Structures are given as structure tokens and as C-alpha cells.
Length: 208
Image 1 (cartoon, one colour):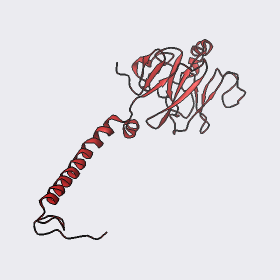
Image 2 (image 1 turned 90 degrees about the horizontal axis):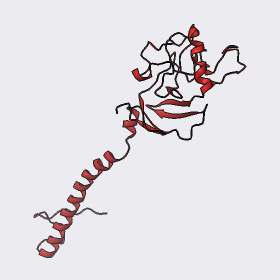
Image 3 (image 1 turned 45 degrees about the vertical axis):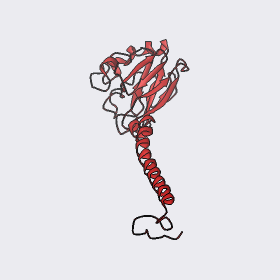
């Protein structure tokens, strides 16, 4: 498209001396300016209303429905780019926890790998629902869940169920507590979380 120089008075070619044409030009220019200004306002507003990927990456809370989580089941969600496991422990799983204390490196969770409200034998708000970051505290590999009774020399004959890291052999019980003499220096991390209803969890936010 050819570009035409403006006439000396600033009007477009063909409008000079024509009041109607000049008025139309002024209206068009004003409307265009208004659209640009409106767009500048609308974009930040829409961005502020939409979920922010950057906010999620920085730790925005993730709400999870656990109503469909069966006993013994595990649900995985992403928070801060990390996998978070939510396990609904059975009464048998809970009963096995104190039986392993002597074999654990930090059975009382003295090291700060959990919020204060999770510093208990179950490391949870509700005994049956366990929330933990699924990353080994040694070098960042992702452990796998190994149920009780599994024939696996890496976890031993007395295994009561828990998590096994295939990278360097660290083992954790069903509360994410690391066993003695393993490469992982601490228990698995319990992220901040809270219940927003009986069946919904908010991961990454524990402010009431």
C-alpha cells in the first residue's frame, strides 16, 4: 500500500479544505486512540482475573478434590513444579507406623521438613490423609510407592509399606520418614496445606 505524505495542515490527502472530510478524519483518529487506550487497560485487567502460570510456579495454592481417593490410593498433583502425593492411608497402614520407629532416622520429625501441625507420628492433619512432596531429599529423584508384602530385596523382609528411591536406595515409611543408614538426610517434605472442605485440600497454603 502506498504511503501518502500529509498536507501542511496535518490532514490526509484529499481532505484539505473539506470540513466534512476533516471531521470524519478527526472522529476516526479519536476512535483509534480510544481503542488503543482501552486495550491498554483491558489487558492487565483480564490478566489479573485469569490464573497466572507464573503465580503457580511461584507457589500459588492448588486445590484438590479427594472425594474419589480410595483407601490405600494415591493422587498426584503438581505444585511449584514438583509432584505432591496425597495418600489415603488405611487403618492397617496407620497401625504399622509406630512399629517401625526404632528403624527410622528421625521418627519424631525433629528436623523441619513439615509444618508444625504435621509434626506428629502420622505427619498429617487428619491421620488417614498424608500429603508429601514426592521428591527424595537426597539428590531429587522421585521415589516409588512399594506396598507391604512386596518381594523386593531393596526394602527387606519386614517391609510394612512405604516409598523406595531407585536412584540410591533410600527408603521411607508411609509417613515419609526416612530409614536409618540411607543416603537421604531427612524425611520427605510435607508442604503447607489445609482443608477447605471435608473433601477438598488446598496445597501450598495453610492460612486459615
